[in-house]
Length: 342
Image 1 (cartoon, rainbow, N blue to C red):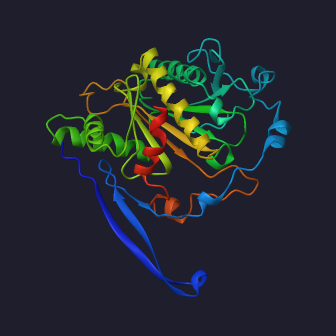
Image 2 (cartoon, rainbow, N blue to C red):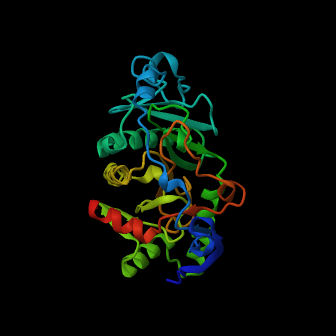
Image 3 (cartoon, rainbow, N blue to C red):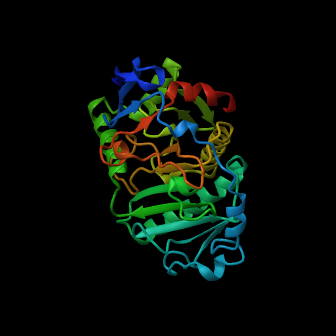
């Protein structure tokens, strides 16, 4: 298991006006992701930590009756063609899935929850499981209809600081012939690791490494292992690793294992005073006739800026133009704080 966890410590020294211009120093770390080799920075204070969530109950009240709400969703949202979904939309428990009217790919869906707003700590495993199940049905249908649509991600922007255009909670499955940049990195480097290391899976190896080191291993929900990544790509990032090579191979039980873990993470974010997040689930390639063992479907969740009327966007030049994520809380500290929930 040649997984190398590489980090470099450094400091910035300056004359501090808040301390009569005496010399101050700030320590930071640059860490390299063991799979993709991309770097991220851990800096003690970024400014994001000081923002508190404002009361946005009036915004919730004023936006009720949106086109995702139960009384409007049947009349105000699009339908799939019959060859994709016979009834036009997919319903599973408390969710309904329909085409994205502003699609990001060939098969771009929106899976809306029934309630207009759900507090982060009230997303039960059952609610999330309904949504993930509907997304699986959509992915199966899309791939059955179009064998070129073999790349799948399941995505969630929760609240405007995370990029959501509306408050009504919804998940966005994306199944497409074209793979996104980061998904491509994960697939390529997983396969490279597999071929260079005696057909050993990076995803199984990283779990073994983290269990052994006992610094970033959170725990399990059924078949899903949860860790904080050595080189995080966002605040409070948590990764789940399944036993399934692709999303449509997940069993009902595995979907509930994922949903249970996500529910616990959202509860944790809430206790930490976080109110917004992004999530992506990365699937292995559908219909892969080569070795499937090199990739395991994995879940990535990050906290975003808190909900405020004038919130600070945490995606600054470092993230957007230098492609260098910066976080203020180490993954080791995040792991310690969440472990009691698992």
